[in-house]
Image (cartoon, rainbow, N blue to C red; front, side):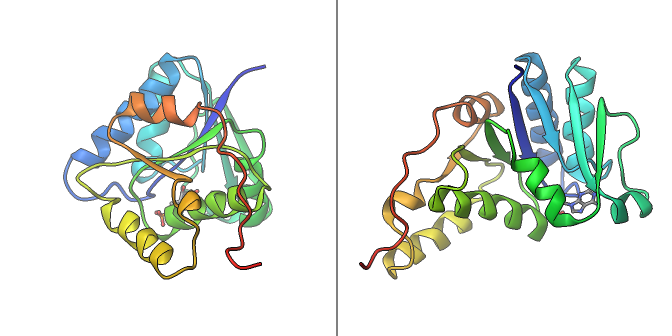
Length: 191
Ligand code: AMP
């Protein structure tokens, strides 16, 4: 059976070239290693760049996109497979099911929401797969600080803060996303 990684990333490309370069490196790295890429199916922003780089390197790319975004004409037309879902919820379930791990590139609310949902599900034992942020220009530093704040304030266990891994290269991101799933630690701090 083939191994697949799901990538969450911005539907905008971000300011400057560093984000776009990281997206292209990640797509190419995934394809070169013979891993299937699953992502949100868009042709816009970093999403389109990850997919195009993986396809250019000979990889298999599955996009999972809800009908309303197809109708808005942001679906990628050249993927190996495009799965069209009825809703955002169905789409996310399909992007999560069967994936060996998750790589997160910089993005906006959609990216945060997707990444934090998988972390949350890991915490509850509903998913067991690494979530790895590929950092560019210290983009994820404030997120790590926010999580640290939640640990200090007693809302997140220190072990659960480690469910979000931060790395600096595409190769390290793929390595970490393919690593064994994090051990399950009970979510609640108080009995
Ligand atoms: P954002 O970070 O807010 O740009 O949202 C990006 C994430 O939300 C992606 O990983 C997608 O799964 C989803 N998403 C948001 N906008 C689009 C779009 N135009 N086409 C496809 N997926 C999108």
